[in-house]
Amino acid sequence: MQSWFPPLGTPPIEPTDPAGLIERSARQLLLLAVFSVPFSTALTNVFVGLTLIAFVLALATTPALARPLRSPPALLALALLGMILLGSTWSIAPEEDLQNAIRKYAKLLVLPLALCLCWRAPALSARALRWSLAGCAVLATSVYLTVLHAMPTSSLGWWRVGDASDPFVFRNHITIGILLSFAACASFLAATYARSTRARVVAIALGFYFAVPILIGNGRTGYVGLLVGVFALYLLRARVTVLGTALVAAAMSLVFTGAYLVSPNFKARTDALVTEVTQKIEASPNGVRMSYMRVGAQAVAERPLFGHGTGSYATLYQPEALRIWHGIQDVRHVRNQPHSEPLLLAVQLGVAGVALYLALLVSLARAALARHDMAADSLALLLAVYGVTSLFNSLLWDPTEAYWFLLLAGALYVHCAARRGTAQ
Image 1 (cartoon, helix red, strand yellow):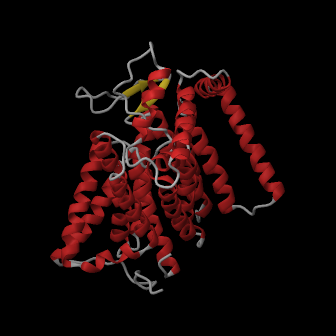
Image 2 (tube, rainbow, N blue to C red):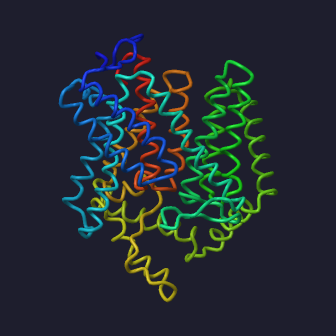
């Protein structure tokens, strides 16, 4: 298959004509969107919107920009979005839920957008990763300031600030844990590629700088993301043996045991998880999550092939929500979702929708595992953290995690496919 990438060694394109300047502006706006994701939804939306406008203007004069739309990830992302639109024709959801779901999944367009803008600028993939880590540094620093009671608040309510017992800012603790777990492990990954001792020490220090807010926070998802990321890093960069794997697993267990004993938040959140699950406390965060899974599994069993239609989960779960919270809280207007991306897609679109979703992840993983360099391993690391945490969080549904994953995945995939010289 003929590649839609320029040949290896092609110098970065720096056009100076008006059309080229628009394209270059679109690339800069894309980087600003990547940078803004960890700490501002409003800025992310603005920069993504401006990127899309600039891209469309550039596409009008440079049709070749659309060539990456023929790549497997772009085709699969568009196919999944198309099926979501098609699912609206058989949806049982009320109009408001239906429109909300379509808006949520419209973010899938960001992946093809990143592909198209990066393929003519070979350095943009690595730059996108660096800008993402810079945005995560803003987020991590803000968490440290929150712990020290030094984080300013917004008089206009533009961001929320927690306290030392629940140190969150800009994002909730789940989102903070996911983003910073990837940032920490990507920094550790950079240390393995560093060419000097100084660069290696800086990368390791940065990794710990990102990791500590996870351990002092209240997000169990962050703990899992960090655990998965560290193990993925071992698989990517070490010589894998049975003994080595056992030693790494033992070392990771010791680290997390130590964190359990030292971190009050870590211990409290872990103990709460065990108590809520073993005692089957329905009106608790983890009890509700169990009910999400149960109702979701029943819904999939009822319509396994094409599901109940786009935006249908909230309608299906409403009777269960009323039963659990009867006499405790009014949940008639709460629009629930199962906090599991595969399950949410299965309920809405059945096996067909989940197959498209998994095919999208596999197409990205194939490119990532075909090479071994910083960008390719970063994509593999991104997929590991995203893939596991999306099992118990609806990450494409949530704006921050969706933009984070789709922008970075699109940018890093271009590097992997370009290095291979084929559209994989």
